[in-house]
Image (cartoon, rainbow, N blue to C red):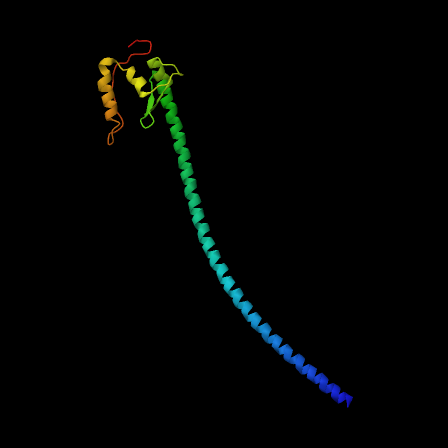
Amino acid sequence: LKTTEEIKALNSELLEANTELRETQNQLRSLNTNLEQRVRKRTEELAQANEEQAAINEEMVVTNEELTEIHQHLEQSNRELAASESRLRMAVESTGLGTWEYFPASGELLWSKECRDIFCISETQTVSFDTYALHIHPDDRSWVTEKVYANLLPGAEGRYEVTHRIIRSDNQE
């Protein structure tokens, strides 16, 4: 009897274990299906991200090529500008031509060394438009300043050409 009862008990345990095993297998299948779906979804997301990154990389390559071309153009322009400045500097130095720049908004007036030499004004002396106007010959001052101011008005070229007499700081004309 014991063996029959033992066999029944073992059989019952075996049936229970078998049921648990089936439930566990079903759970594993469900989890595996869920995992496969999540992997597929993530793989699709990564594939899309890779495509977007590839497109961005292509744009960056094109942009880099354009920037390289612009950089080379700027370097060439800078070389040409330096050569032009050098030629202008030689021309100014060899002719003794004075140059100046006026900034009406600030009233700042910048004179080259040659311009200061022409007017006999030291490097340390501050110059302004008033300084310049005081050195224009009195017979020319009115029409020269009118021409300058007319070119500062909106719509004017901002450029003018005049020939006039000056009175240097050493009182020579």
